[in-house]
Picture 1 (cartoon, rainbow, N blue to C red):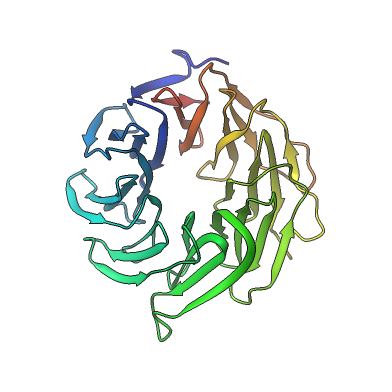
Picture 2 (tube, rainbow, N blue to C red; picture 1 turned 90 degrees about the vertical axis):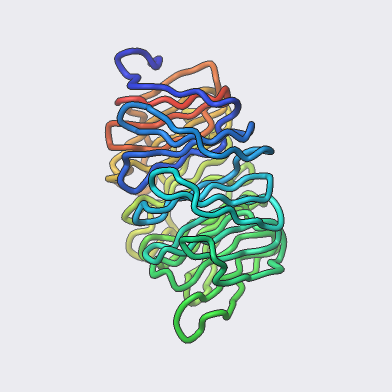
Length: 338
């Protein structure tokens, strides 16, 4: 279907390719940023928006704190800007390189910043708490353990895990890998760290023991992966294909993923609905597809909704199980109803 008056609630337009789209924990606000550097705070109910400070060389990352009181936005200009929930500036943090990855701790208001070869942790007002400098290479992604005691940075040659609380605070541990890791996700139960790799594999580590497992057979690099909110399923995008791995019971070893092939070009983003009932994928072919969550491993997934456009989809985020935000390469962000 096309996005029309029956499905479209509102739209806002940024200046260029939408590179950043994140929804606040209360689902009432979203932040969107483009490669032109403009950043807006948007009401998800009606699309009314407020312009935030721009990043002259492009916006690259954004994250909301778990309580929704803080928003961080980073860019190619080497600046991370922290705002309160009303969009008022709190602090501007200078970093050594592009601010490619941001993540707030699950409970405490601590922000992890991956920029260049450094990983910094700051408090809600931008004051530095930890500086884990000289990572193995340029940081591509960051993620927290569910208990907030450890933060990880993915890069070429593996993941570096750093303790930020308790008696081991300040200590580090590495999960080595011979290639480049491009994306990092930690399961909500804290058992698994999963990384998409340049060598066309998804590599897994047991988060505390370090035991390893690889899932191969992919035709290209893995840049997008995400756990369902309850941790049962891991969605992985590769080119135009979607695979969904079962992490129930003993994990995915020896199983076949649920799968689909609904895109004619590579998948740019994927996102689970808040309840985990639906999974959305957006592609360079302009298609946004909504899939049901699998019932079992090896299932052949069939779409429940398809939104077509002549413009590539760039980012996706859910506001509710019936409402999806779709961002595109021409700068448009729209709210669609299933």
